[in-house]
Image 1 (cartoon, rainbow, N blue to C red):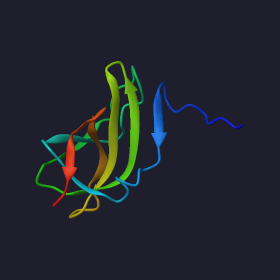
Image 2: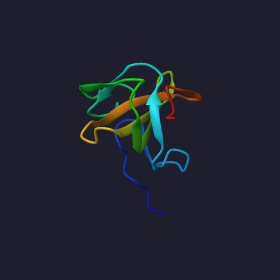
Image 3: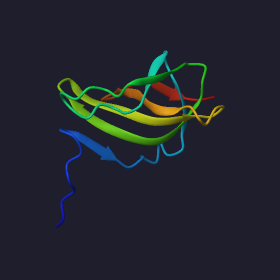
Image 4: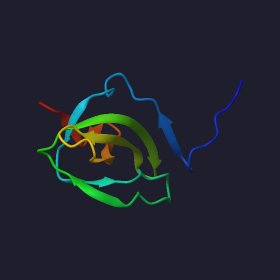
Length: 104
């Protein structure tokens, strides 16, 4: 059996689940759009490159589950529907609590 190399300290790269694949979501509150998600327990988040607003729609391109001291955070790599050049990572929620909703 072949093992995959570790990504960051405790970061787990996941395939986009069927429920998120090409989903269009909106953040529940204004949230930073980051260059990268956190890498694990003690690694900081990527630089803030923009802001995602609840009035904007974003297509989910990729998801990452990042284990932290307080649980597992979901991070979403997104692209704004109206402005495809606006792309980055947003916080998707922790464990069963989500920070985004399906877009209408």
